[in-house]
Structures are given as structure tokens and as C-alpha cells.
Image: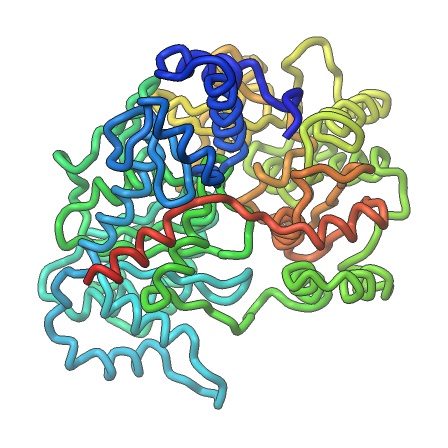
Length: 546
């Protein structure tokens, strides 16, 4: 790796530790190189780095490395960790192993009858949802994966009803997601699915109507990284369900599992083929690989189909010929954009601004705005979020649909990029800057909560945020739009992977348009995310010991 790729933070970190080592001369310089690489890769989302045998000897000679997690660095097999991330992996694996040894539910003799009641198989096809329910009810820890429209929410609502039918006392159930957007989507879906349950109203009432973010569930204590709930002060819930689990990083997943009370059940929902978390780890994919008896993938699509599904599957299978076949077949739901990207994006975003001119309220405006979104791979550079946000803003200004006199203006769409638990605003929350009718047109920023309620804040109180006529694909996780316009850079870079493109495509419900160079598309589909972690090995080591 070229030294120019290292940041000042990587260099400072390496020097800080090397000055406290026992090494001198060339050995010290070699040690610094390994540490800069560790720091750099950590910031790219890896839990650890792979090391060679000579690096292994050098590290052990430094006096700052051990095998038990008592020193700043840990070597395990051929992997080097920062102590904290080794402990995150160690703790998560240990806690989940302990959870999986928990006692089974009583009354499982009634399970087959209940599964027949909730999952009547009316076709000859294999019933993946019923099989997932069987796993989740009989295991304290379970994972249900599947692509869009495979029925993860439908399945988990039925699972919660079955669990309640098997016990005598009302269950305390928590529903959570990593972001406010994902929580809002899950809440809407849960409410729709509950009404269709084939059970008594008393059972339906046990299933919560509200979904919270993980940070609110655990009780974030900003600006510290700590939470109110942990092993010594656990959550009260008997069952915790986490949607969009692919977005949950190693540290947060570890803190969640730590905060579960003894004999609690944990059900993770997610798409294992999506992008891994922004922070370190690929926890959902690792757990699916390590724990096949706890995981089941739903494979039958019920509402997500047509050209978009074919395109998503082709990308996921890294079949570039099939990708081009879909994009060039002329289907209105899927294809390459023929128009100028700025003109098209401004035209599609103009709908909510015209409603605003006609006096529509925030709820209607936000629903219209949320129908379409531009998704970019990169924040800066050609075809980036910064370029498209600026271009669309200028086009709308020229058309008289917005009037920009400063940072805040009527109609400005924003996304929060910094958590603020005190205001109940979290990274990824989206809002609109609008005149407040209750305060003589004073500018306020309006947000829709997961429960459908609307909150408003003075612009000066809103945490760090950015304009969001376009957003990164990473930030779009947990969202759905009727149409997405995917804009990739004109040159290949490490961010571009098949997981990134698959995630972008599966944000769309009806229409996908792409702006992409032929060679970049081919290389993106061919490139796969491969995060370096040791989580799978830790589960395998535990199995080998038992």
C-alpha cells in the first residue's frame, strides 16, 4: 500500500504506539508501517488485518501485543487487532453462544398446530416463511434473511404471535432498527401485517405498534459512546427484533447483545447481500455464515419482481451479461438514463416544490419528496453527491422553484448526519425546511417520526446536516423510493462493489435508472466486498472446543 494513502491520523496513531514499544531502528519503522495499515484498514470497515509470519514476530517483539487482550494490540492466528475490536468480537461470540444454550420454550408440543394456523401452505412450493418461524420459535437467537418482498416482516409478525400463544404471560416485545427511516418503514409494515393475523385481538395487542431506533432502545448517552442499558442494567424485554441488521456494526451489535436480559430472545432481520455497515464489521453476513442452524433465507418473492428483481439478481450473481440484457431491453422499469442527469433529477424533484407553492402541508410534501431519490456512490468528485446536490439546487433556483438566500431556504431537503439523542434526531433522519404556519411563516425544519407524528425544530438547533437532493447509497439503506436514479462515477474506485449496486437497485419499488460508464459498471459488478474479520472463526473455535 502506498504511504500516500495513509491519513495524518494513521501516521499519528502509529508513531504514538511505536514510541512506546521496545523496538529501535528498522524494526521500529517496520512496526509503524504495520500500525498505519491497521489504522487505515480499520477506517475502511475491517475489524482487523491479515499479517505475515515475519510481521507476527515483529509485533510480539514490540511489547505492545499479546494473545489475551490485555495490551493495546492483539494477535490471533494471522490477524492483528486493536484491543477494543478484538474484545468486541470475543464478547459478541461469547454472549451469543451463551444465549443459544438457553432453555427452550415450554409447550412446544403445540407448535405444529400453531404453524399450520399461521402459515397455511396453499401451494406445492416450499414454505420458507414457515421454516423460518420454526427456527425462530425453537431457538433463542435466530436470523431471517431475504431480499426485498420475500416477507421478512410478515414472517416476524406471525412469529411474535406464535411465541405469545406458547406462553401464559404477556411478552414484552421491542421492535428496533438502526435508523429512523428504517424504523418508520418497519412500523408501517408491522401495522399492516397485524390486522391480518389469524388470532384473537388480545394476541395482536401484545405486538407493539411502535418501532424505535437501536440508539433509543439502548438509551444513548451522548456525547459518550456508552448506553444506559448494558449487562449490569439490561433491557426489560423478553423478545427483541432488529430489522435492517446488515446496517448494524460490530460495536453496536455487541452492545445490544450485552444489554439483553437472561433468557431473552433476539431475532435479526435483514438482507445479507446488501452493503455491510458503515462502521467496522460485516456482522450479519458473518453470523449467517457462522451459524447456519440459526439462520434461514426467505427465497420466494411476493411483491418485488419484474425487471428490477432480474437486475438485482444479475448484479448479486455478478453476471454482467445478464445486467446489460436487462438494461438494454427497453423496459420502462429499468434502464439507462438518456436525459441530462441534472435536468432529469430537477424535474423529478420539482413535484414536491410545486405542491409547496400550492400550500400543501408537510405530510403531503414529504410523501411526494420521498417518491424519488438520486443515489450516488461517492460524496465528492465527478457524479458525486456534492456535484449533483449543487447542480439540482442551481437548476431549481433558475426555474424559480426555490429561492436561496442563505444556507436555509423554503423547500430545502436535509439529512441529519450526526446523532442528537436529546432532540431525538439521528444520523440518517430526513426533513424539510418549511415556513411554519403557526409562527407567521418562521422557517422551521420538519421531520416525520416513526409513529407518523411530525416534529419541528429551529434550523439552528438541527444537528449537523446536509442538503439531500442526492444522497450516498450507504445513506439510503433502510429506505424505499418509488424511483431511484443511480449515478456512478466515471472512473473505478474501491467503493464500487456489487453489494453497493445491489443495495441501490433494491431501494426502488417501481423504477430504476442508471447513469454509468460501461467499463465502470462491469468492474463494479465484478468487485465484491471482502471485510477482514475473525468473527466466523471465533464461533468455529467454540464449536471445536465443545
